[in-house]
Length: 191
Image (cartoon, rainbow, N blue to C red; front, top):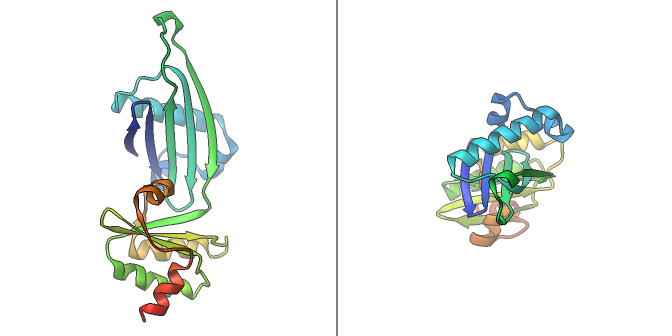
């Protein structure tokens, strides 16, 4: 579990798929919105808030983003506190779950992306975008079919690792090097 304070009233919790498995949670549990999942999220949010000195009171919004190859990103947002007395403290959780249908991997070397692109092209994957951010390369692969999903994840993991950054952050602060057809451009220019 990785924690990051985004603002005074917002924190980010990143859970890898291994973190979820260690806690006995499957993707089906999350989508099923079970009591087990609510308890897990409550425990994790409390743990994260304690570690980051983030006081939980008032209305708390929890957004959960499922990143297929990476895990979950949980954004906890606390509404600006109104003047409350100790007797009036309350906790109101609002949970929203979204699914991101893309794969985002990070690479330290440009050559790794070129090699991966050649291997992915054999599977007909061309819808991709290449970014550069803080000295590393990020490859966004979109519209992956269910039949090739596991293969794409396995191949990408050979050359890089799943990104813990959100696509929003990469889009805002990173530099787009090749848009939409990165794999096609890379294999045509680097044989």
